[in-house]
Image (tube, rainbow, N blue to C red; front, side):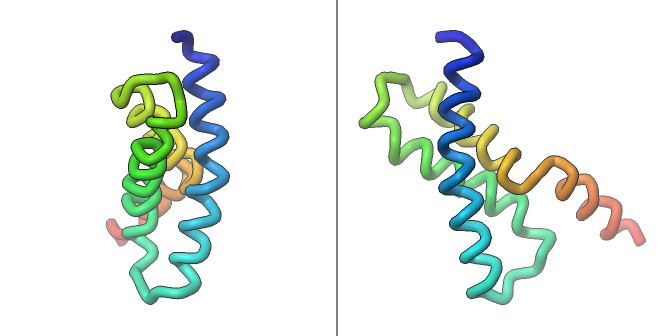
Length: 87
């Protein structure tokens, strides 16, 4: 499998992760600094659930889920949260 396929899988999972995180953010009272970690864990969880329907191994899907979680929360958000905590 090539990297293009991995990114296509991650892009499709990103839509689900973004929607879930937005609903989670609006319905719970969790601090904003925990949302990036929640996004990454959700991406990995969704990827593991989707694995039986795809023709890829678990390792590939976990990596795609982590990439989806990172892109759903935005890498910029991760650096912004880290900078805010230093103040």
